[in-house]
Length: 483
Image (cartoon, rainbow, N blue to C red; front, side):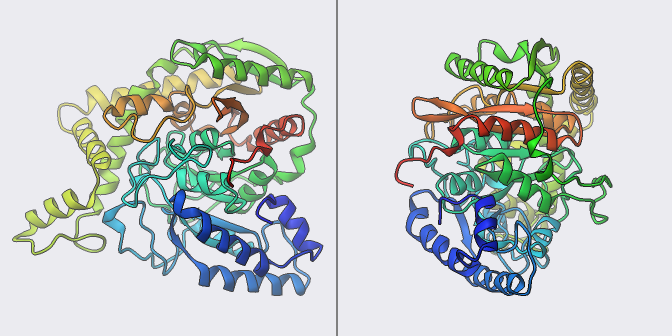
């Protein structure tokens, strides 16, 4: 049962081959057996899962149907879940139980999805390796000595290890696509505003976006269908009709114009990954796509711009965690200033503290114009590059990451080296575009992903291209040894 995709589970439940309760018990037992070596979950919600599974079985018995009705999933631990710990991977929120459900959680629960638990993540979603979590690093199921990518590494590792078929993640600078690439999954960052951020604990509000992680594009389409839609509670949510993503998966790629940016293939890219990307291009050409070289001239400025904007927004968002109303509070503060200092100093880990400091500096008087304002101008130039490119092509293709997964601890002493792993993914967040990573092969036994980018609200186009590719390749079907 654990090898079934979301789509196969939906068919199995509809054909009464098994019940949601049976499936849920199998997967909960599998998590209990295998997750200690991965550390992919922070909290398991066995009681809730079995309640939801039984309710889903009753709904099906009463004639209801739906691709997510009775399907087991997990949520990244920054989506608020009522009455359940929502820690954001931080000591600061270790004791926080959300008083309400995030919109994404509520929508998926209403569709009948069964929540097995909350997955491990980089603290406050800050990281590219899932090593900054207060609950310890997550291991990559393809090699337990390597990172799974971050910050949605818990979701990615759990799905890759077949502990469950799909999970939610969030993507601020590549945090869905990068772990998807490093664990052999399909991961989608939707257009900014497509999925509600209400109840999703913020890192950088103008960049954060929730999305699905699964083994196939077909499964991502199913999960995105349940997540997407306008939310009046979220001021950044966009009132745009949600198409039937699954219905568009059979579209031919004949005549599809694919752009490959020349800037993607510079000195920082592992040549073995470059070869796999070119192989993916050839595969899509066989399916009728037309490929041309394009240019994204301002891509070189993306990392410095991102690492000014994101920490600046983080320093503002995280100012609410002060030890007063909720979250971690230091012992015996002598006065209010001591309460603030020690609660934040003890509650936040080193990576979060580093980014708060950088952000506060960039926003400080005398530096705002020189750093934050300039970074926002670069952001506009990057967006303009994409708009010009999409006048010539339908999608943009390239590597998701410059390297395969690195060893645990290998980049801990050099944060900039870890930041550079996001070089291909952060531009989509700066521009607000949808992006998808899909499996494209292996280097030294470790998975490699190819990234697709599309114009605003063209998630269906990305999912269709990935689906057609997956019908003609088998990279996405490979399973890590031992799982």
